[in-house]
Length: 275
Image (cartoon, rainbow, N blue to C red; front, side, top):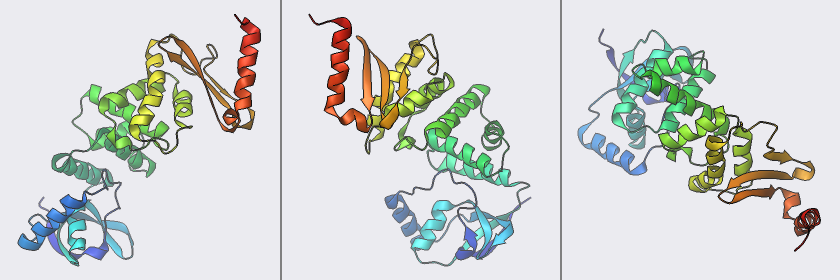
């Protein structure tokens, strides 16, 4: 059935009614789109659906046309040509939005996984697996499993990673494998002491843990060998596998006292004896 075309007030359209898979707009691309619309008009109408529970001033939710809507508002326009869709479910509307953005722009693996979790959190799908099947119906079983792992990374580390949109699928795969083997606490402990780090700095901090997670016969949260201690006064001690053995990393306020490190070295010297 062909959707009906309407002229709608932009202020009545809620562009955030659906969890968007990409909300960061490139300023140069937006300027270019606005200039094109100013010269030639809007060549393709946006798509909306009527909200079942309107939230004034919003009467409609946006399915597709996020960039076009932003460009129209930048031009100071107040109306837009829109196809009024009547999807059977809100989940169908989301799948249509994802399909459009898959074609129009490259969506990163992190953004796809974040959208999967957002749709579950807002009650549109019961589980991440159901969300993946609904939003990305043509994925193979292997790709489905891979995206499920990426969603687990977003859920476990999304609050601590910086610029995670830059993570490749391969890096997300490595993180997912480590998380499934119980290495989450160690990964978070490696990231916690870093101050305003970039993604590459964070990746290098996690890399020794990811390497050990693939070579160790035990899981990250096994009682032996001991890999992580959280002690009083905010002191954290983490054992890290290196090329030549192990390193102990001390972090927290207490670790910044030079005297404590002297005490540790004195203890080790007494234990093994000096040359």
